[in-house]
Length: 275
Image 1 (tube, rainbow, N blue to C red):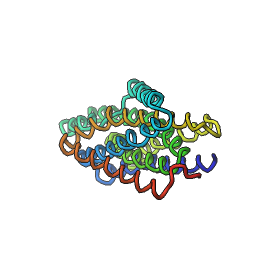
Image 2: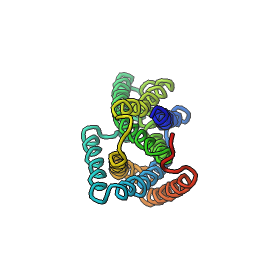
Image 3: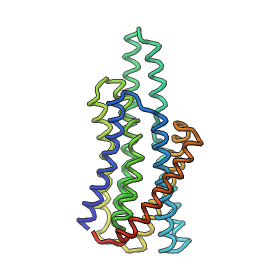
Image 4: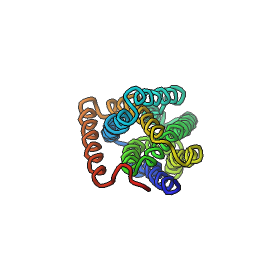
């Protein structure tokens, strides 16, 4: 169990630090390419959909039966719908509005200070919201790593790509408000640490060994969480930033890449590989 926790922690750190990569886009370029972020979000959505339906939910149904597998899956959907209702994931939209105000009010220092305070506040709220979103993702990586290295690797990859735009969403308003690259990078990085924190906490909450049925059910719930996150938050952003036609193309490209990854990891890393 200790080795499984260490592997899950390492994988979640990759996902956590991918928010730092998003912050680097901001501090190095000053402004994100929203179309590129949309394409990246669409690609990550394809990865998520593939692993949710073709791996996690599929294996749960095959292992514990159609009814139980679906109940666990939709329990995950309902759980994350509840989370998303009370903690909606912030977007990059308000930052663009504020930048337009900046251009119009260049001469008003007092007004600009007010705008900067408002944007800094929005950046802090964004960081808190993303941290709360990242916590269940750490749980997902932990449960996947218990099942096997193959499952954990694929979950970590999909989540890491999804976290890059989240890093941009945190860093952009903070950088605009403070004009400090370090503050923007630091806050985005800290928001990503909620993912490995989720691994640590769940490792202490769960018993040292889970029955195969419970583990498959929990992974089915993870599939529900990932599916809801994809359809509710990632796809709309991909459509907004990259356009519907381009986003749909990269979604299917992401699904194809994840399907290939599932196959090649299956033949090289057995699903029940002991850690």
